[in-house]
Length: 315
Image (cartoon, rainbow, N blue to C red; front, top):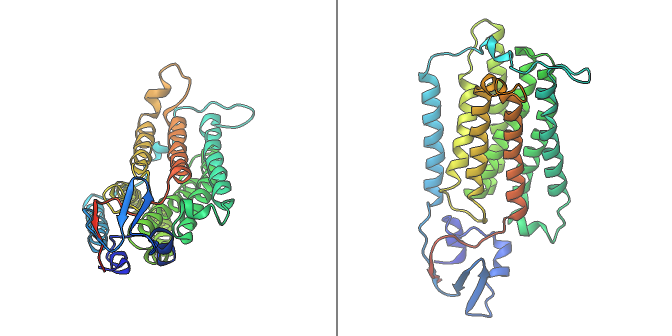
């Protein structure tokens, strides 16, 4: 099987332009780094999911999440959600803890944008095999920066109308991460093509929820399904073929997200312990930590030729 055929089947992930950097025809054995050696003119045998199976896994997961969302009863936004534990003002800012903690999103967002936008041409291939893969991550950090503003605006005077501006930027983060994983694990053109549709689905889930509340029959199911699917995709990345090191970092990103949801749920219980900090304030910090871990992964990861066991590659 040729290099290009292996690439087409999802066994090999380097683009054609990168092939010559790793498969030098003048040598029989090539050290690709990361402990991987390939014998030119031999066959690759892998144990990871093929591209077609990965696509099927994404589609099946989406169908399951959608089916569950349709099956569960319609759920409006409880008005009690807006009654957070820590109402203390400071420096003339209402609900200071929940407002000020959004600074963490701004810091991570700006930090991530600086890192991604300042990558030089020689540095870019060290972090992104395909330069197009950088763009969804740029929007991830744009979304985090916008979340800092949207969430601060909401927490100054919490209600359903302001909550829209808190949730819209978060869907940019969620769906851009889904697009990034599709680009890296399945197909860069497919992920790029799906990216606008994913963003529209995310924004649409917030608009649909808001309109349902305005009409008096609030329905959070669509928005909740978007969040759940995004989190599950992070975990799917652990079992899909990887062309970069540090795939396990996706598990930590998901763990920070789950921690944020738990802290949000026990907002009052945490604040009751000494009245120092509320669970919702800590939720913001945990969610920002998830964003930081994405940035850390991008900074430290490197392309890898293959993760499967390699034996022979023959043309």
